[in-house]
Image (cartoon, rainbow, N blue to C red; front, side, top):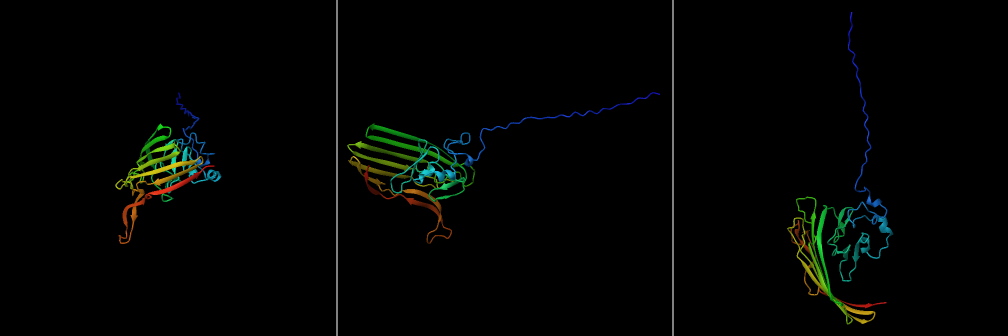
Length: 280
């Protein structure tokens, strides 16, 4: 008797896989408010030299002699004071003239600041691009001509059917003038300021008019430490507007729903001021 059979062997192979995973990034993920002195230590975090965060602790510890010094916590930003009545501050960012704040945007908690209303309001993100051409010429030691022209384009970057124009963003600004200093103890200047038309609503269907102003200063050094000068603002007494807005308001006799129209803050009429400056 012969016996035969089949033997079956089941082999199970266990594979063990392992790997070391290293995650790297080009940027440091950090809360800017938690960075020690974020105005100076944002290497690898900020996307631009003038981008950063100012904490409330820094503002509390910083001595402030004027309001503009709050903004000067931004690296490279200089805010100068003007002596003219109702004159806005002048802003310079790393050598560039930012006009009276129309060429840069300010936000609080990500919400744009409406400077003329003193409030913040949620809005879409925007992008501003432009170019500035600055010129200075001094044919004589006591005479300087200067002229600055800037063009900028402001648009919302997030789509909305109402349009992508940023209301009240100035597109063209011209500043030019001539200055005399040290000419037989006499000094003076004449300056032109031009603000081009601005869009007032997002679809660009309503625009403001351009504004052109000329200011004059003339003076004389009475003594070594005494100067007498006269300033004339709006020399030609033009009836232009400082700021224009487009919104709905209602006057007596108008429909209950109001009328959407342009609202204007007029320029100051021709104004003269005499200055006596004593040096110590």
